[in-house]
Image 1 (cartoon, helix red, strand yellow):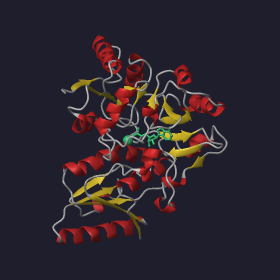
Image 2 (cartoon, protein in one colour):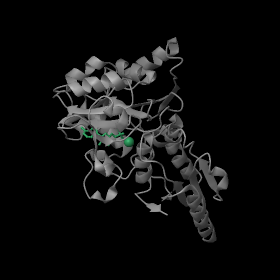
Image 3 (cartoon, protein in one colour):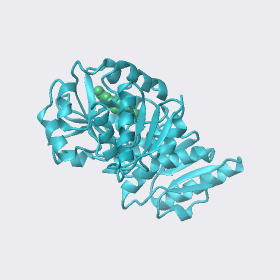
Image 4 (cartoon, rainbow, N blue to C red):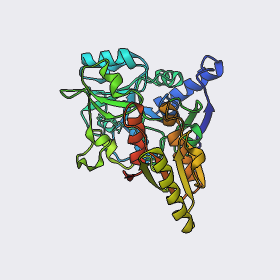
Length: 353
Ligand code: AMP
Ligand code: MG
């Protein structure tokens, strides 16, 4: 299959060309095809959420395990009602505060949503993205787009369209290129089907932000702790994710000690003829002796780190580094989402010094 590639940014959405492309993208979806599109979190791989066969194709194109459910994306609030059995008060309050935006809610599903979409669960994950290209594309496609991240299963989620192309060229009908995404980590997932709201995946919308709207929000303890022995409540979270090809180890501790320790590791690796990649931050990047030292961003503004993390992991693949060492991040605010992804990418390999 030939994959069509079209640049379409939020700024030129009103042009005649943009409207034509979006209509054609919508037609591809209605005919059962796959279209990758930008959102504010990461690029999504979209199909009609209400049809079985297109959703099956998503799993095939990604190489994704079939018990890992998809998030259903909507473009207007009222579209939530047909796909759910009930919309609790909490969902309305969260939507008021954070939709459109990077928040996914788990609700009880209606019969309209095929089991293929929800990985066999009787609940459905719903999100209304804020990215204008995404919302317009959803509306042009009939209103319900099932979309996981547009990467091959296990690889870092794509934050640029060229990474979608790398993974999906020849497997899908179309890629919409909206430039680099704004947030860079997938949406926060909150489950509203149990007694208490619970975060199943941390993201840009933090626990603190959710608790300003809902009284108390629990956090699935498997999010940062691999040793709990429990299965994560979001089925997809049990799989190895975001992994670069090289072995990644996180080094935690005070700044000077971390720099010294990582440089020691670099020297050892060099003796074995290995190429080393390092994930550093603005303040420390000049102090490392690695072969490829990446500046993930500023610790004073961790949103910059969220935006760059997946890109850096992919660049290490392109540069064929043999081992990667990363600094560690705070586990509060957006730092919790950063650490969650980094720990997964590292297979939970972290050394505290
Ligand atoms: P991705 O689209 O690749 O970001 O993955 C979507 C995530 O949402 C996966 O980790 C899923 O397990 C999770 N998810 C989707 N639907 C549900 C659901 N009904 N219940 C719990 N988690 C879900
Ligand atoms: Mg994903």
